[in-house]
Amino acid sequence: MLQLKSYKYYIFLLTTLAICWIGFKAIDLNFVFNILDTYYVIQYSDIIVILMALVLLIGFTYWLFSKCKITLIKNLVKIHNLSTILSLVLLIVTLVFNEFISPSGSSSQFPLFDDAKNTEVILIILSVIIIASQILFVINAFVSLIRYFLYKKEV
Image: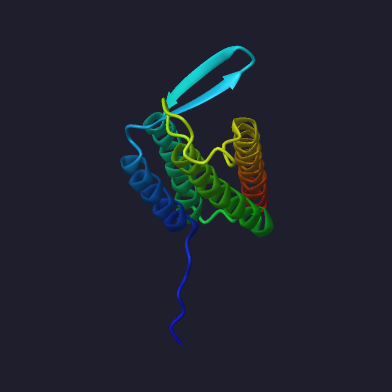
C-alpha cells in the first residue's frame, strides 16, 4: 500500500513560498506602530525577508536532522510546527487586515474596527508565541543532539 510520507522541511518550504508570495503582494506597504511617544515605521518587505530567512533556517535544520537520522521529540515537533505556522499565518493576516482597515496615511475606511491598540496587542502576542515556539525548537534540537551523541557513544 502506498503511503504518503510527510517531511517537516517540505512544510516549512511551502510556508516560505507562501510568505514570499504575500510579501510581493504587500511590498509597498508600511507597518506603523507607536510605543509611548515614538512612531516606528517598518516596511512589510523587511518583515517578510526576516520571516522567510527564519522559516528557511528552520526547514534546513529539519532537513539536516532528517539526513543525519537524528530523531526529535515528536510532541515538541508537533507543538513547534503548529504554533509556528499558525502564528505566522495569523501574523500576516493581521498585518494585511490592519492595512486594509486603515491604510497608511489615510483616514480609516471602517472606523468601528479601527483600534490600533488591540491590533498592536495581537501582533505582540503572536510575536511572543513565535519566539517561544522557536525557543522550544532549539531546546528540542539540543536535547535530541545530546541523546543522539550519548547513544552513539554507548554503541
